[in-house]
Amino acid sequence: MSRIASDMQLMLRRPPRQQYAALCFRKRKKQPAPEVLLLTSRDTGRWVIPKGWPMPGKKSHIVAEREAYEEAGVRGKVEREPIGYYSYQKGMNGGLKINCRVQVHALEVKQMLKDFPEKGTRRLEWVNCEEAASRVQEPELKVLFHIFARRFANVESRPEGEESTEY
Image (cartoon, rainbow, N blue to C red):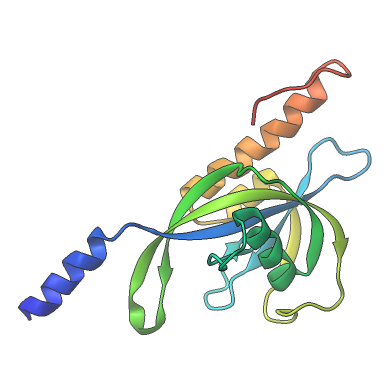
């Protein structure tokens, strides 16, 4: 029993595991605000964004881009710099939960494929940022959606030709 307690203490002290995600978005004509892509997780059916574990030899934004393709069948232009981070507890086989820190990269969707590795295992839906924030469970991801929406609101309210460094 003391060994189990000791193991649990060690697990709780471990730093969070790193994952990389893509916040997939598209701009619609006549709509200043972007739509973002949500998908359901395969195990619980929660609304999430495409994410995955690091891949040897691959940079974080490339991993995020790859996950967007595998999980949602989208291709596009991914940003090298992350737009933010969020944390969550990933349920593992056997009921164990591990802390994960997810680095999020924006990906502007240019193409939706008819065939992709995880087709048929998830539901996909395009929604506005406010709706996305209301559907996801992770508080920090909710905030990221609101910040992302403001990024486009700032672009729309500036005089033409003027750029912002705010994200």
